[in-house]
Image (cartoon, rainbow, N blue to C red; front, side, top):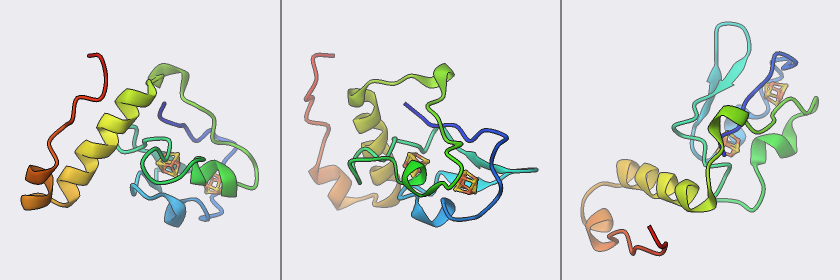
Length: 100
Ligand code: SF4
Ligand code: SF4
């Protein structure tokens, strides 16, 4: 599931540097999460880091973007391949660890 920052955000800036996927950025008025980059911290941490640090608890799951753990892992791998292209990506093809 990608997460969502609601308009209760007070722009305290603490979540942005915590995101391992650089999914959080300042929007027109409040911080926002790029759902294409948010893996709910799958691949990096057990818990969503932004949720852990947000002082006003304004980062719920986006109900429009419910994703399975498998799909979050796939997103994590795509992001890693984009960051580290070449031999490492080539040496680690998708192992097909799901039934799909
Ligand atoms: Fe970034 Fe993790 Fe928060 Fe998603 S849940 S925005 S990946 S810190
Ligand atoms: Fe907004 Fe919460 Fe991020 Fe602070 S931690 S900028 S209140 S979403």
